[in-house]
Length: 539
Image (tube, rainbow, N blue to C red; front, side):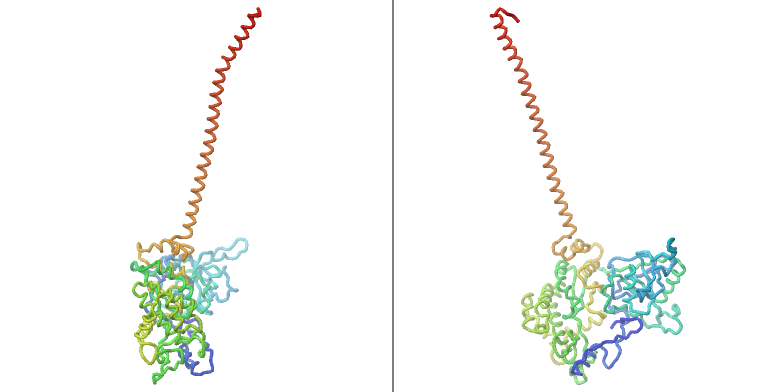
């Protein structure tokens, strides 16, 4: 188990005791607290996991280290995968455990004073804040730093590592630590969006000395995913009763299909080693009641914490094995596994209740609607060793080995190119992390089109980003306006031309009339003259 607090590595687990004492003991054994033995924190970096983050100092250059500073990355917060945060650093000279006592006008380096108030200027955003370890949980410290505007947090360790030797000096009366603790989530860190690191004491002391001497320090926190080739591998550690990853499992199929063979997915089912947990007695019997299968070999915790009713741990193990077989038959070849995604969705829709979770008929119905052959899956489950008697199940044994290599401590867990993805298990976070894992020049078109889109799921469905659609709409409207303008100009020109034509016609008519009128006038005059001559009058 991870260490939730800094003051003590012991995690207290409360168990809801039932009427049957052996049931309670079984659950306690499985959770690692049998006979009151404390659950020790897993303090080393899990084996097989690639460190994705980097911590370095650019100003002053005397503190710059090739390759960066060794550190521990928090298991909460949302790092900008593929990006970095490079800002000036302030040292709060405080643990930041009490939000009401935080003074943003204090700390180092010393700043100028406000001319009106006479108080030192506050920390200027954006900035990275360094805090001292101790006094409260990591989560509480980082949450308070986020509330006062920090873009990232570096927690300065207050205890030396024993391996540091003479390079580090602990406070009097303080013993060195064999390993640094993992910055684990205490269960309330889902609201934290900024990243945080734990810096070892021998390094943190140098940085604090520099900033307390009123010298500016510019620090960079960066994250990168290993991108060795044109295919990204990602895996999800979960259980059939996991609520947190349900939304991801229901919605990510479309992205998996769109990525195709350019991304290889592996669903991992988290189960416990019953023998290691003491669930198999000396006589080979199951000592953990209904939490285990195969006479206590493979176990899972009771999802509803009621050993007498509802879904049991053995039911969870059975469904885990079933999903492993479905993936083996329908997804292992291409890494996409459309039928696996469909089955999970059908199972969640039809069978995810106490009444139907272990119902064979409901499971067959879910397989039918997802295109999975029930006989093929049953043969796979039995061929691996089944779930009865004290028999080794090869599929479940492989899953236990994978779990040990991965070092998973918190569920659900998502890994991309063997790097643990921090933050909430949401569609945009996972999709962007996958798209960041490709080698340069090999990014799939779906990533180029949709990774930067505000609604990535809709972009994958439609084949275009929403903003692009808006631009297309604007272009269409512009074309409509242009056509309307051209028509209007044509009408105006036509009217002007028509009027000019009319004016010319009138001028021609007037010209003809003007030529005709003198002839008529002369004729009338001649007639008048003739009359006058008859009358003997000449005009």
